[in-house]
Image (cartoon, rainbow, N blue to C red):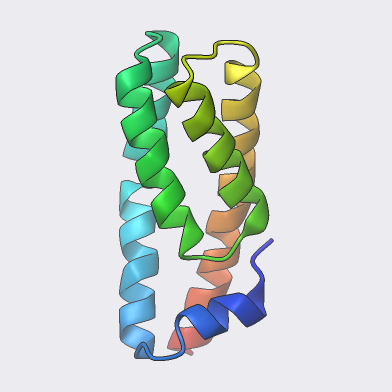
Length: 114
């Protein structure tokens, strides 16, 4: 769940159309990001997984959703440590919570464009 107070503080100096554009970019990259993460996990390519998980963590951090931030951080750490245990479950949880984040961002986008 997005912390709306922190979200608003983070984007307080941005015009509404810029916030909408940031949300749209996240949305447009979403499927490819998660496909890459899944492929990295299946192939146990920890170097690419580290890069992609770290990148996702940075993007998600902008939206002030502590659950997805923590899950992406944990995936980043597992990749860094080449730790296979629990990797698939963590990915599935991150994907599920990120899907919820997408819905919340679409709600914010609707509020900003109405």
